[in-house]
Length: 278
Image (tube, rainbow, N blue to C red; front, top):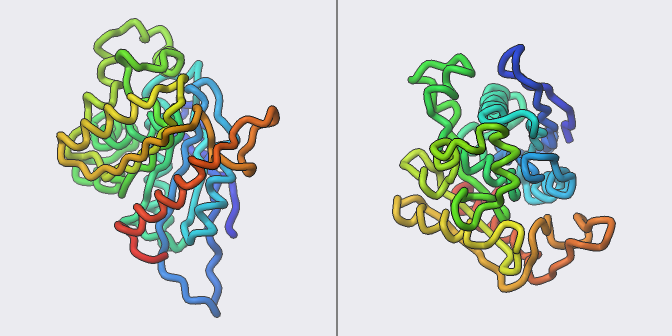
C-alpha cells in the first residue's frame, strides 16, 4: 500500500487540507489494471472530522479492489467555499497523478458522510462553476478535469429547509448563515443539474440528527432531473453509524446496527455498474 499524507492548498490565503492516500501497490508479478479511486470526506457537522468515517472506510474499499484517499478538509471557523475548493484540488491532484498511482482517471468517485456528504453533493453540482475554475487556475475548457464519476452519500446533510441540520449550515456559513439566498444555494436538492454524476445514497430510518428526508429530497430531485440515483432507506439506524459494525464502533459502544451493515456491499454492487470488476 502507498500510504502518504499530501498537503493541499489553493493559495497562500487558504488553510491547507490533507489528503491521506490508501493506494493499492503495483507488483511486477501481479496483473493490475488501473483501478477506481474513492475520495472520502468524513462527517462532523463542518465543526470537526470524524475518524469513524475515514480510515476504516478506505481499508474496506481497498479490500474490494479500489484505491482510496481520505480528505481532511477545513471546518469552522473556515467557511464556504473553502472545503469545496479543497475537494476540487484533491480531485485535480488525483487526476494528475493517476498514471503513477495506477488510477483510472475516468473513475474518481467521491464519498461523504453526514456533513461530508453535503460537501460531496455540493461538489457534484458546483464542480464546474466559474469561481471553482478560477481558484484552481483552470480555463473553462479544462473543467472536465474536475468531473467526478459518481457520489456515495452516507446519511448526508442535504437541505437547508424544513429538515435541515442547522448546525452544519451555521458552521459552513459562519456570519453569512443569515444570508437566505446563500443558504438556499447550498440546499442541494434545489441545485441538482445536468452536471450531477450518478448518486448512491443510504440513510438510517431512525436518524433524528439528519432526518432521512434529506436523502429522500435529494433522490427525488435527481429523479426529476434524470440523474441516475440509487437510494437505500433502512427501517432502523441512527445517525453517524459509519460501517455500522465494530470496526467503527464509538468508545461508548454506539455504532452497531446489523441491519445497516449491508450498505457498503450495496454501494460496491452499485459501483460495479459503472466500473465493472476491479
